[in-house]
Length: 124
Image (cartoon, rainbow, N blue to C red; front, side):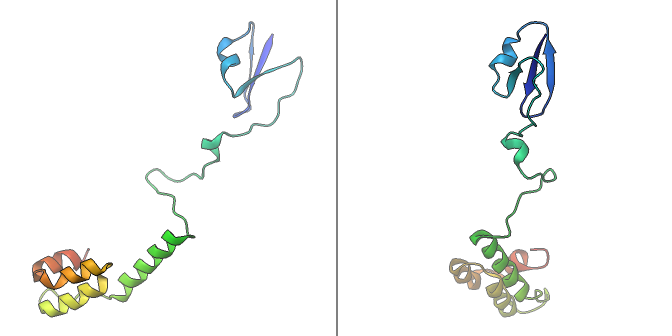
């Protein structure tokens, strides 16, 4: 009886004859006699942090995380949007606080009030 051990899962299987497939796979090793296999060593997929499906892994460190935090703070500091009935100037002022780039800030005065409301209003 020939015994094989899967180094990723720890599974041990027995075969009457040599199994060419198991012999060819890198994670399967042949056990000699009554040899006791080592504990499983997970492959790189199993070492990855697990998240719920559709959830992106995010780091709380590094330049990207710092930039995202700065953006969140900027958006919070802008406060609530003005009423729909507020003047276009009020909407321009609010949009300038929410803008994230100089190019965006330069474009804001040329936008119509309805575009400003759509882009920077409630739910934006």
